[in-house]
Length: 490
Ligand SMILES: CC(C)[C@H](C(=O)O)[C@@H](O)C(=O)O
Ligand code: SF4
Image (cartoon, rainbow, N blue to C red; front, side):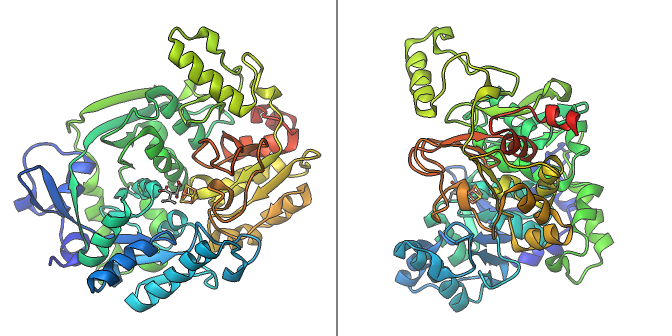
């Protein structure tokens, strides 16, 4: 069994012995450093630096129990309760559904037995795993990170290779700290130029998905590059990488740079025996080499991106807020016409109506896409001094206990509460509605989450994806609204 130090700590990417002459991508460098062996069928056995665990992982622990296997490297795992936890209180007993309550309790028990670090409801660090791990310094550049959750791609924003795995793979990682994987292809998405006023990372990723499609990056790992990405904060980069999976990608990643290193410095779990500067010097070598080969390339000009919203049941159904609801009659294929008509029926929308005329009943600011402090700050800026429209239920669900506390220290909670928002505790909440926080049938939600699938926010719910500032604007206006208009008025 390889020692984790070999891969994450003592093993320098500069070691000449391991440096092939061909230029390599960020992905190639991390993959090659973690590949223990490759089988004849092309699958590689990878060493896993960090295994993140959430409350859906009970079946994996059960698989180990049935085989009588211990957890191989509990020190390389970390767990938090997020999907099933209540956000109105901090009591596991407030989970109404007995099965879900049992799953949440099982995580506490299983991690305790295995000796895995666990951030439970009584821990101030608890929150959505994809918010908690980066903020605790558990996700670092160059690492290979997995979790039984598709939005693990989020951690790629720190220059890691991070992807979601299935339940039996979770069990495999728990038992062996390794995983068999087929090497994916690479796609570089370059965003060049400056974003316009009112346009942020969520608009960028929605524009990327609209351009390449919900299956556009299937079988690929996306590396986001270009001037626009380099100018972004780490949290903005996380929003982008988070939604890679909504374009079908295996993972999304961004080369670490000074922005990354500054953001990480001093976080609780970043300490090891080596000096920080030495580690940073190694991490700098992770960036794709200049002439590295990507299987595909896409380029988008930042100044062509507008504030975006989705109208349908796929994240690829994203259009600028200035657009109208599309008309099935404009499509040439009968099958596509029928499918769009069915979507518009589900969404309760009329072809050709202005998106800004679409009334909302709920607003949800939160999730692993947009539940970080910068997201809350940007929404609060729009909301400050204004009030939620009559009849709109608006919620803010911070992505972690730490985000919540930070927001309270900055007084953001007062801005939200004074405006008529509910200020909740951390968790996945209305992103997936599996904890009972849901949008009632037929009602419409302006949401900062990442999926607008049929029934995603509750049976019969209607979701429009957008940025935190756009969701804030919708809360104030009571309908989908161009945030730039509100920003002009203030
Ligand atoms: C429940 C979990 C496995 C799922 C995922 O894989 O992403 C959820 O987090 C989601 O966002 O749909
Ligand atoms: S916040 Fe939403 S997308 Fe993120 S892990 Fe939770 S349910 Fe999945």
